[in-house]
Image (cartoon, rainbow, N blue to C red; front, top):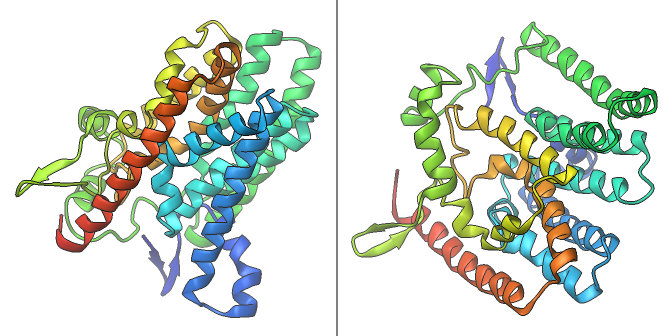
Length: 336
């Protein structure tokens, strides 16, 4: 996925993951183990922050662990955790930043601290700026529009604006324009994905196909053996615990805000030339997954985390582990 300009190779995606690795690489060199260890530590941190968020919402230590397991291993986030590749590291780092923003929001609720966490998410994946809108929409929906609200939103937006300016300067230094991220002409292996990109980065005609891979795709049967294609499998199949969201109160501010930013994200991703290939589940949607995890916490806080929900989580973890094994085997024996 590199971009070649004037004999230089550039990574067109968000720079924060590389920035975080720079001190370690400076000391240890370009050892492959650096990325794997870093990814593992990041996954552990995501799990811990998910536990803390559940605890902050009033859950017991045991139930908080169950809910963190549901997020990390009983949802399509498991593919991002298990695949220690540069793209997946950026997805996981974005999840962590949004979870930290939620943790601060449900704690001391300092707008500047929330804004810094969201700005780091944007520095990891600029596309995550849509998911960041959740915090702004929540304040507007729940508090209305007033001087205090606007002041709070301005403070929260300030770090994001600074990061957006720095990213623009970064793009201008590399590619000559603050709006040129390089993704229109980065190298892709010849084939279907490259052909789709070359015919247009966004195209509404792709929505049905992308919707299928995001929400409907089951494992494929080939030669009597189930395989998981690199486009991934359905988010619904991998994340059954999130079906409890149907018990959420649709008029609650967090539900309204999460729904709006999810629809906006889907409008972008479903028309995009790629689905996230190679992936296990729709990794692009991890931008909004922490928001729905928070809404899920609200649901279980009202209903309680019953034995049925725990059984669903346990079953989902087992099924996802087996599906990921098939996914790994698929990449050894098949070519797509």
